[in-house]
Amino acid sequence: MQLTRIVEFHKVLADLTRIRIIALLKQGPLHGQAIAGKLSLTPPTITHHMSKLREVGLINERRDRNTIYFSLNEDVLESCAAAILSIGNGEGNMDMFVTESERAAILNNFITADGKLKTIPAQRKKRLVVLSHLVKGLEFGKIYSEKEISDYLRSYHPDYATLRRELIIHQFMYRKDGQYELNPPELWSLH
Amino acid sequence: MQLTRIVEFHKVLADLTRIRIIALLKQGPLHGQAIAGKLSLTPPTITHHMSKLREVGLINERRDRNTIYFSLNEDVLESCAAAILSIGNGEGNMDMFVTESERAAILNNFITADGKLKTIPAQRKKRLVVLSHLVKGLEFGKIYSEKEISDYLRSYHPDYATLRRELIIHQFMYRKDGQYELNPPELWSLH
DNA sequence: TATCTAATTAGACATTAATCAAATTAGGAG
DNA sequence: CTCCTAATTTGATTAATGTCTAATTAGATA
Image 1 (tube, rainbow over the protein chains, first blue to last red):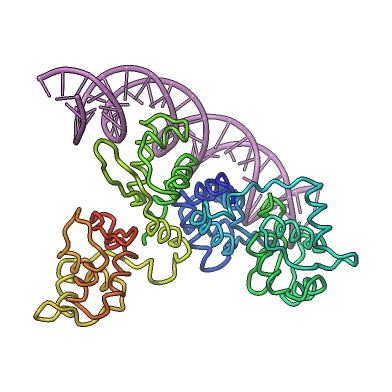
Image 2 (tube, chains in turn cyan, yellow, brown, orange; image 1 turned 90 degrees about the vertical axis):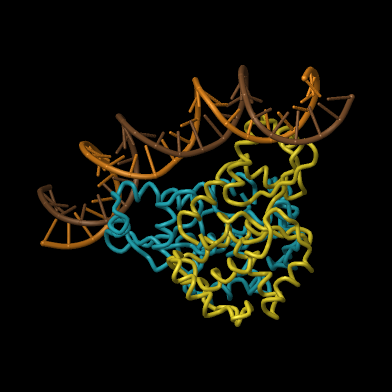
């Protein structure tokens, strides 16, 4: 993870109101007005903070009629909090830019003619490229069960469990209560 | 750990310059001017950032003649980074205020007549009180070897290894390369 | 269509904070 | 004592940001 992203994450947590929002959301989903009430703040203020939290991928939301329920993405919280510890540990600080031709070469090396995954790349960069490829067969906005995800991944490679975990770790997907959902591309660790 | 302390920690990391300083110090100790040179900033700016880092206990320093070598306290980095994950998990969010009579009662329960430690308290609050008592026999500013610390702790309780680890985790002491040093009281998790 | 509620946007105000230049302090070395 | 170097303090400037009120948008329902 690049340094500026680490800074962005910590900027988001560098505010008491947002920490309190996180503490609230740990107990379960809440809608905006409820958060505003509990913290004695106005709805616009909550909107402001939610958009900050959303920018770094900490928030997932679900509509129910007119009201939006916000919930916490604990996987992102965990991986971002750990990022500061692995600065300079080789993996994290490499240049993450991938050209189109590099990308094509990597996919050519790891994807067989019939579209299966030969092996899971050990190198982080190559693994990310492969994951971003796998994820193309999933639909944005759709909710998947764990079984659906596993079956889908198994159609590429027998070690579906590793692939599934990698999709979460690198923020291609969001998981909560056994339900999986694609994250927007700007959250993927590839970018 | 209380919410405001978590906020303070993240504020300190919410700056690119300070993250870069941390990245530099991960490779080893450096003096002020060296940091200023590597980051193309002026010495006063570095002083400013070092004092911010010091406020949350991330920095230890050693003088050699005229120049001060700063180094990173990775234990603090680790425990503070983890704090955001355990908000609301029982342990962290309890009221940490301890009155003098409470303190006396706790010590009376866990310290025998001849000054030994009966058992290591399971409750966090009581454990902290006991640790703050043990640490009274250590001298501030003095550098201890691991053996010295172990021997000292063993004079209170046979499980010296647990006590030693607890002293680090709760920031009563700082450890680097097998050398131990007392932290200033304001860093102790008790306060 | 009209209405109601939740959420967001826009704009203003106040506060915090990063940086630098200049002056000062601290500790050694000659 | 005098100089030298590293670190710090002070004061000023600029940029970023949390919060509010007022206005607007979005979606659902009657």
